[in-house]
Amino acid sequence: MKAKERLKSILERDKEIIGEAPHRAALADFKRVAEEYFETDGGYELSVREGKRGMEVVFVCRIVRVKNFRTLR
Image 1: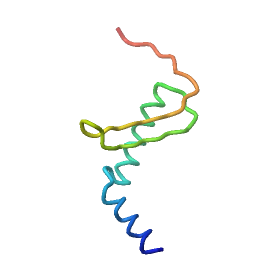
Image 2 (image 1 turned 60 degrees about the vertical axis):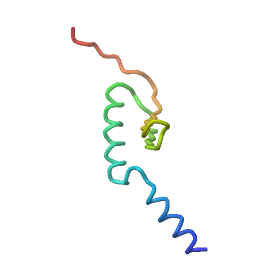
Image 3 (image 1 turned 90 degrees about the horizontal axis):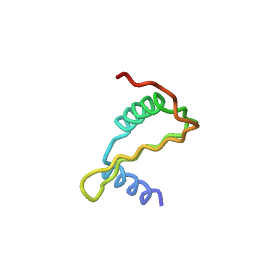
Image 4 (image 1 turned 180 degrees about the vertical axis):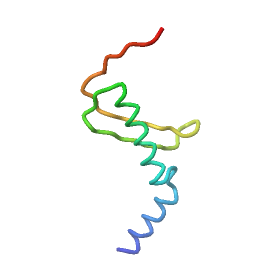
């Protein structure tokens, strides 16, 4: 069974769209931007996958509230 699990792991890594290091870096950047606009509860998810017309990036975070801020005119 170990050989089968190892092969499955290798195949899954080969089809990954984004590697572990770029995934961590992108998630950290999205988290930083989200925290500028929202008070979050610390739950974050980032996925990159093949879509119908290219790739899709989905970032999800759970928030407590939207922060108030003023825009410059």
